[in-house]
Amino acid sequence: MVNLTQRWAEAYMKIDKDLSIQVTGGGSGTGVAALLNGTASVANLSRELKKSELKKAGKYGLNIKKFIVALDGIAVIINPENNINKLNISQLRKIFSGEYTNWKQAGGADHKIVLYSRENSSGTYETFKQRILGKDESGKQIDFSTSTQVLQGTAALGEAVSRDRWGIGYGGVGYFAARKDLKIIAIEDENGDSFSLVSNHEVNKEIIRNRDYPLSRELYCYTRGMPEGALKDYLAFISSTKGQIIVDQMEYIPIIPVKN
Image (cartoon, rainbow, N blue to C red):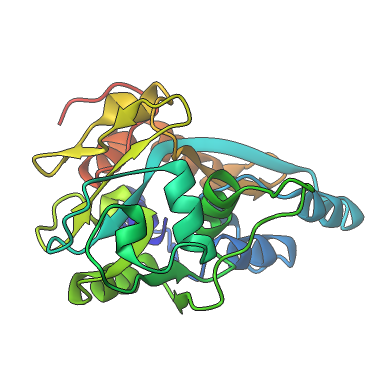
């Protein structure tokens, strides 16, 4: 959420010129840690707080508050030179867990699959791991293949896949929608229905808003108790029409109808 948050901060500081808002990235886990230890006023997360994090907050005597501030879809990306256009959830699970190591196993060319992932502090990493990799028959969480190349940030991941004909990765659709050096593939759900997240470089926002797309998700702001004063006003701005227009401009999905 770092690019979106930066835009919100820049816009709001033009409204309240006496307020300074500092934005730091590093993944959802980093944001939670900063919120709990008091070095951040707001944690911007692309996932919900874990039970362990809520328990830790309780030990600190904190009453954490959650605000849904936007909607998003996690895009699965490959290089445009790869002839794959669609994968189902089972195929994605086998690819990212390392069961499939060659593109021909997924209907593609005879070449080794190169995996790219976010770091484990990323909320996108957590969501993808839960929704796509899932659990095995014994109930144990399936992990990413040990051959996966871990990158710090979605932008870096996108650059890596754009340069690697046989690479595959994932991330928030806003980073990739307008790019012509990346291909966002369609995902087929467990019912056999196929969903294309992007058409002609425009995000299909309705399949995210309706939660039809298998990797639809909410984006959150978390605070230490009910926000007051300047923080309350800033969060109100994020949820307002002006704040949500920024969400739309960044190729995410607003929580209220907006017109640019």
